[in-house]
Length: 72
Image (cartoon, rainbow, N blue to C red; front, top):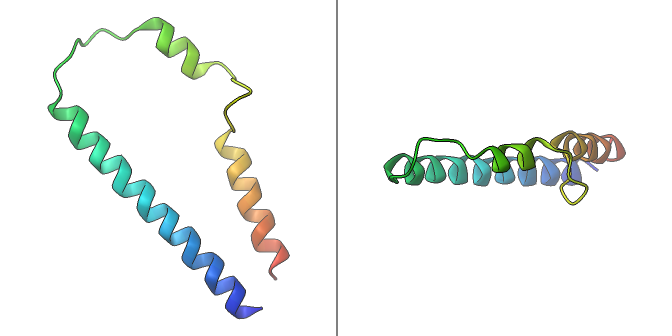
């Protein structure tokens, strides 16, 4: 059981690392890209609206906590 919990923490740490690397590379890419500074309101409205195709980050957090609870 302890081995399984260690494996889950390793997986979570790996996913966080991939997320940070992806964020930093996207930030570096978009900081050097030239474009308009005007924000498209349609893109903003689509990103803020609750789209059923997208899973909320809180749902991922809930699934992770449930996974950790089951392994205890």
